[in-house]
Length: 217
Image 1 (cartoon, rainbow, N blue to C red):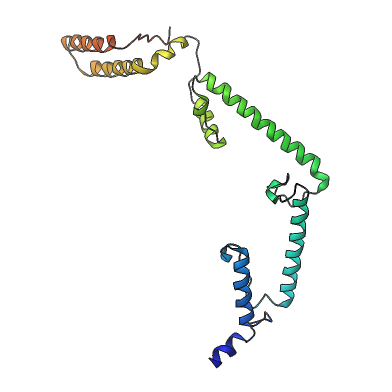
Image 2 (cartoon, rainbow, N blue to C red; image 1 turned 60 degrees about the vertical axis):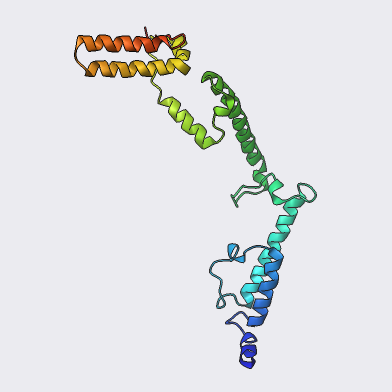
């Protein structure tokens, strides 16, 4: 017990504080912040370089940070947080109040671009003849959709676009059956076999509703 008491009351490296003082303060602060201290533990700090001078500098830095944080919060509304500040999220530390007009102008343009994108989303849903909810919401997915649209073949002028609705529902199944029929017919020789396959395919085709296939002149 005596050796333990002597150990915890010895100065820890160059900190100028005893082990008991460090552990007591650590326990108190851990309860105050109510979070895992490993998340905010500063890198590169140890008992050899965190001497009394470094401790005072750190305290001053935290005091300045708290003061600036509170002044920014006070600019918004009562009981607000830093997340409500108009400049929240801007990481350029070289910006000053002189740049406020340019920053606000850029943010306004960005907001306008988002509104235009939302409006284009409605237009795209109408063009693709689908529901608005089926158009992606995130920029990443929206860009992927735009890339897919760019991969569509260019129109050459002889397409019958009014026939596209015929490719839905039962008619789409009929088109798939026709494609399978063409493959079977080309791979099997013999006129009688071709006649048999043609009759079978026409029976399937007749069961489809309002099938109209012309897509090109």
